[in-house]
Amino acid sequence: MEIVILTGMSGAGKSSAMRALEDLDYFCIDNLPPDLLPGLLQAFAETEKEDGSLQASRTQKIAIGIDIRSLIRFGNVTAGFKNYFTEKMDTKIIFMEASNEALVSRYKQSRRNHPLAKSRNLVDAITEERKRLQDLRALSDFVIDTTEMSLNNLKDLLYNTLATNDYDQMMTIFVQSFGYKYGLPLDSDLVLDVRFLPNPFYDENLRHLSGLDEPVKNYIMQFDQTHKFLEIYRDFFQFSLPLYQNEGKVRLMIAVGCTGGRHRSVTLSGELANILRSLGYRVFLEHRDIRRDPIGGI
Image (cartoon, rainbow, N blue to C red; front, side):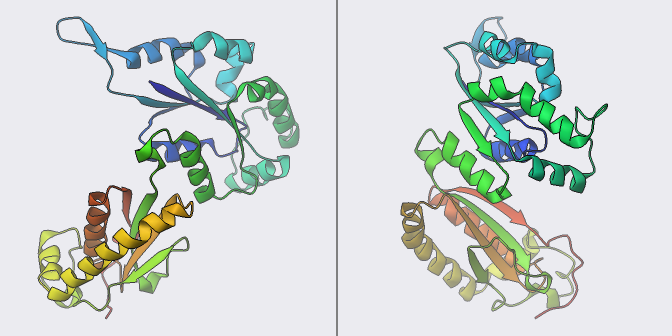
């Protein structure tokens, strides 16, 4: 069983990191009181069969988020962690931090209270937290400074840090449908325009449906040009994606656009995601504008 302990400075991005670990198929538990760790890990290590005997759990990757409030309960932080984890466990401790200036700015933007700021100002609270966590920082396997790091950079770093096999090391592909009338996705690597296909918007029976609905899918998939488009891009992906990966790219964002982001792009992004999965890639699919009102477009 592989265990990741995610800890560090409040405001350094632990919540964002936990979401990224979920994308890496980790079972994530946030803000767990440390004294519950032994029982939790035992429960994951073994599950009970109907006859009362124990079998190995199917959960092989666990991420546990622990913040300063929970860590205070350890007393001696370093000794506490050493006592809870044995050599038999594949455990990695990731410590996240950022500069005081970055943390102050983030707290001001979020308007949330620092957990140690009840009787002191924000800067003093951050300084005190950093002091209390210095032993744990020294114990950690990885220290991530998020001062100048974007969310995508953080995800990429976690993917690279925790990849343990060929599947983990494979490039992760995000496919996102969108509507041109609402603007291009800012983090796109490839943008595919499917506005050349007939638009279901002009069929009154389809207008208020989306590209997830079978009548719309059937309408779009009836055209030869739709199948030709998918055939061309299957060949393109087979050719180009290994080359992207050879250049060290671990994350690729493919944006698929139509006018409103509700019909054609939704259906085609789903078809492209299926093609990419059939090629063996880890794929995440999102429909950015599908819930917007279905109004007008070419």
